[in-house]
Image (tube, rainbow, N blue to C red; front, side):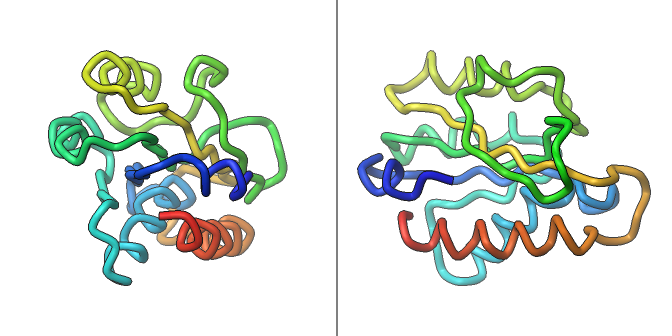
Length: 149
């Protein structure tokens, strides 16, 4: 994740997306929850319904919106990168609206740059918790985001 780029990104809002009942799919929600508990008010734990947070996110008038979510990129579990929404291929989603639709709505309703913080899951089944590689990546992501938000 390019933290230098994000340091120049202005006011950043983070949307964590994921289903805690589906193993590694919880990763985006986990990242958001830890940041919220650390006192960051520009972070939303959207769980599997990011569409319910779009108005709240836009109300903060961000320059950059980062959507953290599990995305199948055919990489090793825990691999992560920032990508533009239009470059995302068919990802793993458990929410009603796809990331492309969410990003398009945010783009049309504000001036913010939209970025997907894509995290490669190992499993998105009914596993009780995230796997160790994805949890380790999530903890690294949290530390990096703390530097820029």
